[in-house]
Length: 237
Image (cartoon, rainbow, N blue to C red):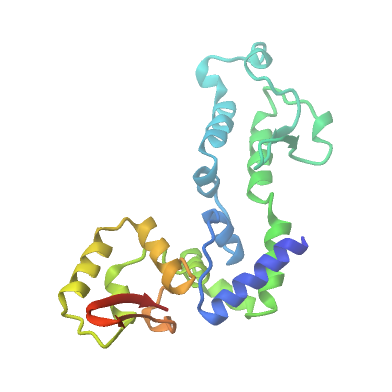
C-alpha cells in the first residue's frame, strides 16, 4: 500500500508540474481514480476471455447443458474465480465452501463480476491518498478518465508539428537545408524512435497534452570546429 501511495504522489507531481509520466494503466483504473462507476464493459477491456467464460456459464442451457450434466462441463465446484493475476480465489467470503450449482450459477456470475470490478479498490484508494498530498483529489470527479490520463501521462504520440513549436534555433536559420533535412528525417521516424529522440534532448518520453504547458525546449545550434570547413551541427537540451 505504501508503494501505491507513492505512485499517487508521483502522479500528483506530474499533474502539478506538467511533466508527464510514461504510465500504462488499464482504462478502468483511471475511471476508478475519477470515482466513475465501473461497468461490465470495463472488465471486458482488460479480460475479455474471462467475461465470455462467465457469460457461457450464465447461459449454459443454450448449449444443451442440464442440471444433471452441469458439473461434467463446468470444472468449478465452488464460489471461486480468477483474479487479475490469474490465481483462483474465493469471490465472496467463504466461497471455497459454497457449492456452485446449476440453480445458483446466476448469483455466481454476478458475484464473480462484482469481485473483479472491485478487486483493486484498496490499491486505487491508496493511489488517491498519495495524490491528495499534491492535488485536490475531490476535483478529479469532474474529469473524465481520458482527461485524467492525459493530465498525468501527456500525449503518447510525439508529433513533429508540436516539436517545431518548442524548438529554438541558435546561429542557424530554420530554412537552412540541414535543418529541413533534420525535420524530414524526424518525420520519417516511428513514434518509438521519436520517443528515443525526446529522451535524448530532454530526458522525457511524453509531452504534455497542452502545448502551452511545454516549458522545456530543445535547441538546434551550429558549433564551429577549427575552421569554417569543419563546421558542425548539434542538438542540445
